[in-house]
Length: 102
Image (tube, rainbow, N blue to C red):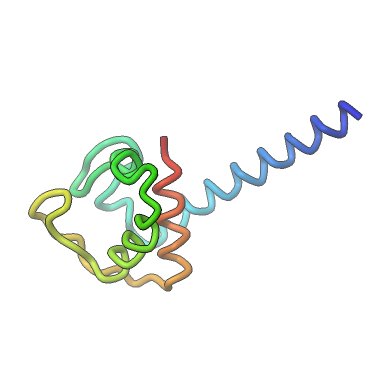
């Protein structure tokens, strides 16, 4: 029984790691990483900073997904984030990944 539990936990870890890598790959494919990095400010804020700012904010995922699509200005400084060519589903996946950064 213990071996089954360990195997299930390992499989869950592999799935989660694969999902995290897939969403990072999406961020790279959509050129998000041209202006953002996970742990340091580039043109825009680090994803870890974004996750910390919106931690516990239940409205943040929808608001940020809309901002990813439409662009925005002012929250992190005067340099605007341009609109991004992403689907609603891609924007939601990207935001979920960003908000999961620790």
